[in-house]
Amino acid sequence: MTQKLALLDLVYDDLQRVEVKMRSIGAGAYAPLAEAFLNLLNSGGKRLRPALALAAYGLLADRASEKAIAAAAAVEMLHNATLVHDDLIDGALTRRGITTLNAQWNKGATVLAGDYLFARAAGFAAETENVRVVQLFAETLRTICEGELRQLFSSRQWRQSKESYYPRIFAKTASLFASSARSGAILGHATAAQEQALYDYGYHLGMAFQIVDDILDYTADEDTLGKPVGGDLRQGIVTLPFFYFLQSQPDPAPIVSRLDTALSLPGRSSGANDGLGEIIALVRASGAIEAAYTEAQEFCEQAQANLEALPANPYRAALTELAEYTVARGA
Image (cartoon, rainbow, N blue to C red; front, side):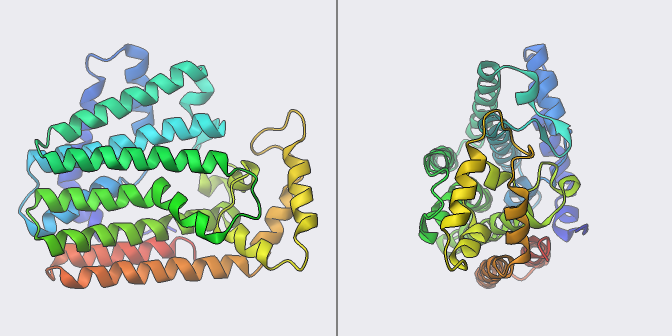
């Protein structure tokens, strides 16, 4: 779905300042690393996380300070660092149609490149000169790493409980949305109640966002996704649509057996003709998609309710629209 977001218009000028700040790390960096990072920045993305930090700040304060720009750059740099490591873990060769660093460099070099971006993100967080923002950055990074480990160690556990899904998507996505909003609130001198409301908004928005991403992994086409359809299933990752699908089966054992067999094929790779296409099609055609989408809508409504305690201004209206956009992507 293509939609022009009011939020991105509101923070456009400040997002350009964030972009300049992020690109500045190329100066003086090892040439191959600088080139790889600039290619990563050029690969696309709406910059929703820094926009959220800037909107949380703008909701309560005037034009973004240099510290607010640094916080926004930190969250986007952290996001990009996680993408580098995610692509390595998943063995992904493309993202948004662009060749990944993982496909160009060996594993050791790719890990170090991701580590470098984590370090630069931490440097931007430190530029805020706010202990709480720096602490929040550290907590978010810890949460993301722990979530990746949870996901790795739960791979192919097809019958895992639904409750195990939510901590994983909080760690993977919602934690960074929530910390983006809280960082902006802290630097914008929010009251305790306002800060909590913005954190809760980011949390619920991020949960909805990831559920919709997990739906699109089954329902979108490869050109839209920028990666093979059904990538999560091929990685052995149980997401909400698959959970509902498996629960709807009178006897899940044949499905589980087919999955284990397909994922054990020698020489298979992500997106390969591994026999999973039929299962992906069954999930897509089932009521599991609607059930997952209903949950995404509920998180969206909670996010919008969180905004009611905040000043009624164009930023709040734009954040309300952002929540609507988040779930509309999966409609």
